Length: 246
Image (cartoon, rainbow, N blue to C red; front, side, top):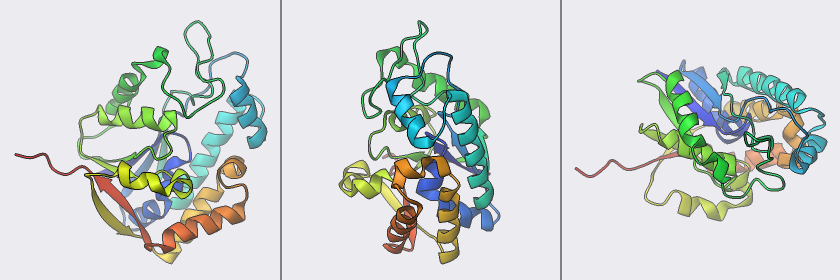
């Protein structure tokens, strides 16, 4: 049995669940983070949105950026004791149509482009090919409504399996009012995280050096934000749908 944390991007699972992942691996569980939008970009000029992201991340080409982020993800997973798997769909900032049209030029908090209407089905099939029957899946709630998070949840739910859901960090820290409607009619379960787990969680997030400015502005704000989130409960919640009525 494996706990599989489905991550839209390289950092989402560790940002949201790093302390729990550490506690699970310390208890001897097999844990993996699977990055859905982990593929290399297609050739072509970068969109304005990608150029802005690269400037903040301190990178140049799309291939260099993805290589760096994969490396950071492996480092973060090693800190937590987990394994990683990177799938082939590129981040939305790089995606294009077959004719080379840039699909997301300025915004990642928008609806999916019609060209990608079946992309969740394609991703779901790719996920299914790597899953074992006994695997436990943990999926983003899509707090913040980033289009890749929405795409990822749609793909995972197509699997038709029992799912756990996690609250998307750092979006939850900025939009706490979105949690209640996102978990309406779901059952919450609390998972404790120790002080040691908190510190490893923070260290895992710190491994994503290229993302720190965009996510938290500074490492100090990350440490404070994650500690504040943890201190509210000394752990985190995961959510699941209630059993279907007989």
